[in-house]
Image (cartoon, rainbow, N blue to C red):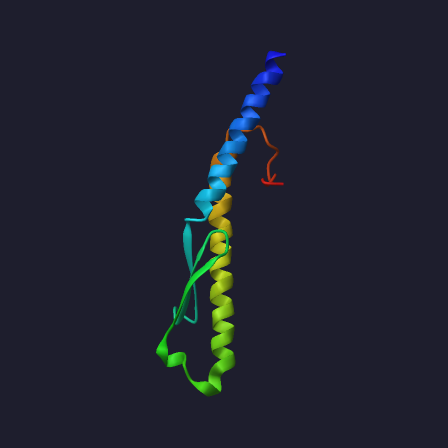
Length: 107
């Protein structure tokens, strides 16, 4: 019975750590760029866009589609970096757990 109680305490501790990690990811900011830095996006690791910077040389009405594509690319770059940051923090959190390789949390 002691093993079950110990396991329950471990599960509760892990749940609290997961809650803390989720709150931390709200404050982790990542930046993505496209067009050699002509467009930059800052967002949280959870995907909330905080800011967009556009080089004034890109503000040409006839090249609107290029600017739109660069913004999409910069957002996707930042999103990938945010996902990577979240995954790294999750690995730190679960490094002592006997989980199979490649298992991702939360499920």
